[in-house]
Image 1 (cartoon, rainbow, N blue to C red):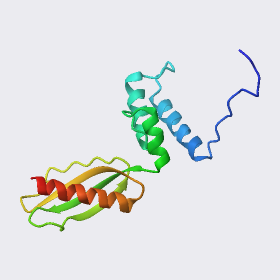
Image 2 (cartoon, rainbow, N blue to C red):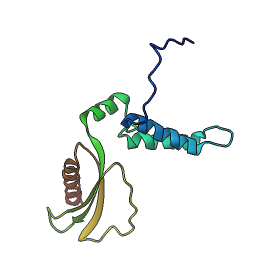
Image 3 (tube, helix red, strand yellow):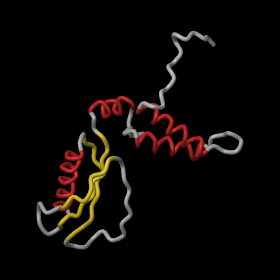
Image 4 (cartoon, rainbow, N blue to C red):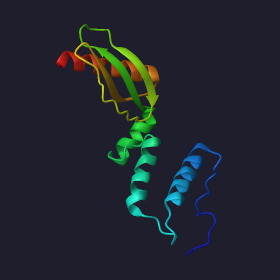
Amino acid sequence: MSNDTDTAPDRIDPDTTEGAAIMSLFTTVKVLEEGDGGWPGAEVVPALERWFIELGIDPGHQPDAVAEELRSGRRRWTVFGLRDNTRCGATQIAAVLRGEISAYDDDTGDETAQRVGELVLASTPEEAEELAYELFEAARDAD
């Protein structure tokens, strides 16, 4: 193995956005580390998948598609709302949150109003709200 410093990769800088993300993953893996120093694959793989998702990388997509998504500036947004099932254009948006957010709600509403949530790809929260609104309204029209 060569010790040529000209071809050695640069060390990460934990004070950059990228370095902080790498340190976050490293910390997560170290928390999962077993007493013998091993990393349990059954726990590390899901942690790695969550890390990718937090960075805006869909582990189910191919690298070229992910690179294009990242270059486009589009991010995952979760939008929650209350859809009025009795009239068009009356859906209320409750929240636009960056990332993929899960919410458990065992009371989704009734025949007149329904709690709804959608995951969308958008460049801004305003665009995410518009996209989700259209999905909420289209779903009501399809029901």
